[in-house]
Length: 393
Image (cartoon, rainbow, N blue to C red):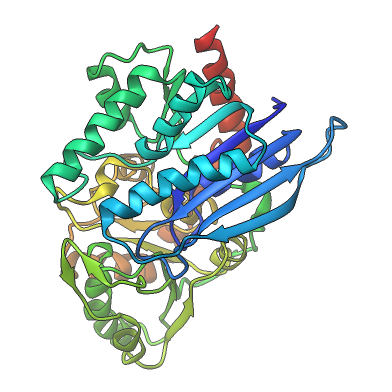
């Protein structure tokens, strides 16, 4: 698949996610690529970003010729989203004002693409849903606007990409034809992962990756680690990530987790936030991964396909996961990890089970690697772009 010109517009976090993977894919398959990112309000750098990639028709990857960052103002949520939409339009025009394909992640970014298509400035609009939930915002008015825009994009897009089967079912209930209703699971850049030989290794290194927030089970880890350390003195906990810039969840302010984790003492290593490529180099060196999503109606992960879980598995790390995201069913069925309730005792027991039985851990490691073998980002995106353009035809 190659593209004459395509623009990608997305909201992003401080950590790499699906949008950055799509950007990497397109940079190797486009003659012209524009990328517009809007960091969420809790990111350290809130400025909207424009990346302008240009190349030639020789088939070589395009390279960024300029990058612009502007508009990092602290605004109320509604004004922030309005600012982001205006910057999308402004940056699109700065890129040259016309692209064959517009790929928008989330309704706010996609609705701009639909309007640009009506103006004749793009030919094909893809609506990429990375997260969705019935109560996306606690503010009822803002939530109503979000869902109106969501339905608008479903009606007027040329293809809808959905990150999980649950969201695909929502689109079906909204009347989207199956030909346009495309499942796009999270993939992994498998070619970037180097797996060490762990023959005879005794598992000893836990890893917790991602934003440090109450809904990610950090409190459970802090409580479970000391008792596990007593039983397994060799145990180490690696934390890759940081407390968000604004430590607020569900309207409640919480204290940064780094001091509490450091207070656990020897065996805890705080790596901070790292670039995604570096994360993929680090993960294979660990043994057991943690994905402890808190069961809650407001947890986006129940509708999503969390990328960190796929990264864990592709790096050969059996995962201990709570039954929130859909992927927990595959992990249980394939024995690529353990599914536990969101509580300290089940977590400690699961970690202890893997540490005490290296053969069982190695079998789970093999299952994890086999499971991820078919989740290459390049293969997934080759397929879904092909399906998208077939739907239009």
